[in-house]
Length: 105
Image (cartoon, rainbow, N blue to C red; front, side, top):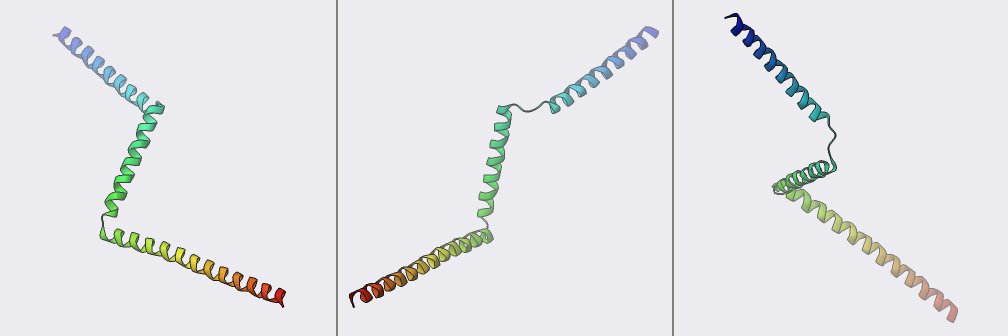
């Protein structure tokens, strides 16, 4: 009976040491820096998740409406710039015509 208890204590001590060693191994693995391949995989996964979230959000009506309004604002800004440019060109042409008229006189 004493031999069985001693064996049981020995097994318990061995199991405790084994668990401790496994725990230490897991902690070591956590602290090991990522390889370049693992970093690339992680970055690719993050990009994929981000793209999926954006596409999911774009499916919502509010987001669609916001995107439409942003697109309209961009279009109007470009149009306003073109109109300003047209006015400036017309003004320059008018000044050039006046200058040429004055030269002819």
